[in-house]
Length: 198
Image 1 (cartoon, helix red, strand yellow):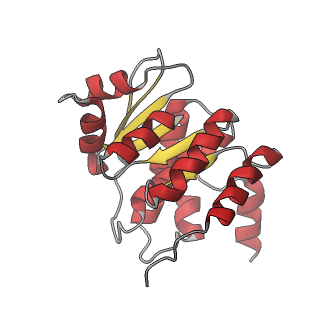
Image 2 (image 1 turned 30 degrees about the vertical axis):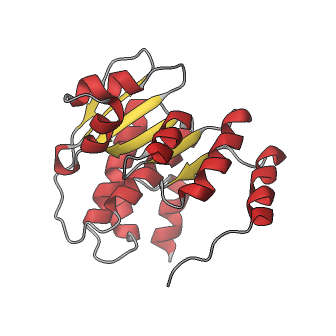
């Protein structure tokens, strides 16, 4: 089933809601760019951090990547956005302003990331018993965003995101199990107690 186009009124309402102060960040997976761009533009004007996943390179997704505070994309996409053949040179080239973070993901080889004017970080992938990689990238993004919102640094965000993605890969199906989250040390004490009790 195709998604219905969003009305101009609904889009304007979404953009206006950003100024309510209820949003600590905006995440976009880079699709439905006609909706994502106006929201990202508004978020940038309000200094709301934008985390963007870019999966294709075209003029619109380039604009989205330029607006984003944090860009997480595959190595080939990061190289294409930067116009560089080397992943290290590409992440450095794109981390071009204060507050900017670029993460290049490379599956089983891990991820490379850098914040503006900092050293490049490489976080290796974890050794996991892979059952299902569907949603591993989305899990990485969710983990990164959660750690980012808790104020963690780039290396910690990447490490947390890597563990979330690893837990997803060890879990068949679309949802990560509590057991996998526990195994990778992703549950906080209160959540662990709730899992144990149930």
